[in-house]
Amino acid sequence: MNKKITVLKGDGIGPEVVNQAIKVLNAVAEKFNHNFEYTEALIGGSAIDKFNNPLPNETLETAKKSDAVLLGAVGDWKYDKLPPEIRPEKGLLGIRKGLNLFANLRPVKIYDELVSSSPLKEDNIKGADIMIVRELTGDVYFGEPKGTEFINGEKVAFNNMIYSEGEIRRIAKIAFEIAMVRNKKVCSVDKANVLDVSRLWRETVIEISKDYPEVKLSHMYVDNAAMQLVVNPKQFDVILTGNIFGDILSDEASVLAGSLGLLPSASLSDGTVGMFEPCHGSAPDLKGQDKVNPIATILSAAMMLKYGFKMEKESEAIDRAVAEILNQGYRTPDIYKNETETLVGTDKIGDLIANAIK
Image: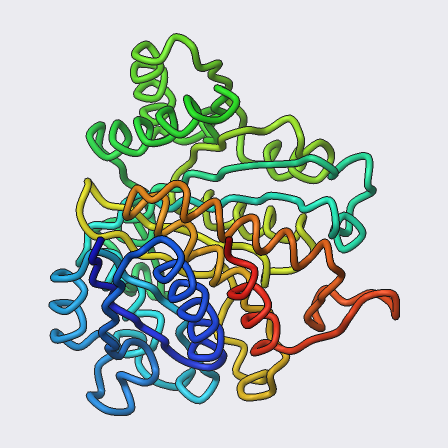
């Protein structure tokens, strides 16, 4: 099978971790007789440097013509003084909007070999396997009106938390569909006790749940959900929530695994191009040091195969390879604990995982 992949390496450590994912994808292509065609384009700071634009039109058009997008990370401290409209992060928001990537999937799976890396006690965390389904193109990040004005002699800033029934329905359907192939539980997270938009969210999710009678639906206020992720994370299967709540909760949940370098993500649209990227940032302070963990990006490539290309066996081969290398004791600095383990760099662990594809 032939697939076209737009590669956006981005800034900081982005190129390093994406290069390892491509190694693994090439091993998959050889093993399973596929052909992956890669086209590189610029986004974030690298695009600002060349085009003074964090998302050039040619990047978006290239992405639209591909079968999937593999992204590294965007951002660098040197761009912090730029106007908000041309900062690297604007490119990330722009491509999400441009590709209509309304569904963000963030799995948090705790490997038995890395239980000791988690800040939680082993009894609390061992066996945890959560999928956070976050709506990605609505809510306060995109709501209108927004802005800053002078009211009664002082500066006032405002953003609009807004969702339509249609936006809620489509993300809820994805959450329930994913739950159907997992443990058939959805916990919808909102703030319906105080927010009108959350009351509409809850009503709409309940309506959609009627189409999935096998799935057990529960509801939780976002403040309680934040606490429960720490107190009892194993109670969750699929967490469904809006953009801002999902942003916060998924970052909190990412700590459960012990390192952001382990956590992938997928951003999906309505059946067209998806984008796949690690949960971590660009970490410019670690750039070029062969220290960062590329597993999150490698697992993002596995999600691309599963959710983007419907290549289940190939995706599972990557998952198995990662687990095998971890079981053999290989560790990057972020998850290295003691001398019983083998400390390796970014490039080496990429090679090991690629070679373990079976």
